[in-house]
Length: 171
Image 1 (cartoon, rainbow, N blue to C red):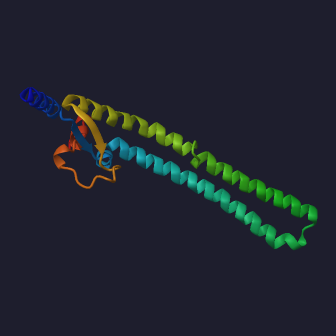
Image 2: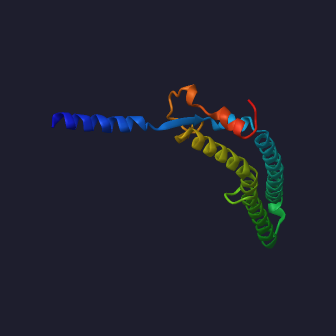
């Protein structure tokens, strides 16, 4: 009876150890740096962002100039004119805030542009990682760049270059 229990335990242990899970790492920063489309998209986003930032700063500067002019002329203005100027300044400041929200807000133009440019690249990377994972039977692939709690990982399990190869980029 003891031999049968010991044999059963050994059989179960052998079964579980035989199906050990395989893991792999990727370095998303490294992969993205080596994708030309990502560099072009980043450059395009930087150009658009800079253009919009200049526009917002110009509008903001105009609002500040209106306020400075109002302050210097305030003693010469009637109450009615003061109220009118204050309303114009508030309106201009609201326009600046709306423009900034339109371009840089959570659902703003920059967010939409980034999503339209980056989503295809991210999908290609995901599909490449998925294909490699299925080919090599990886149970999990972890991004080394975003997993700050990884202290050490063997370079043997890093499949970043395999992902680049799958994307048609030689490294």
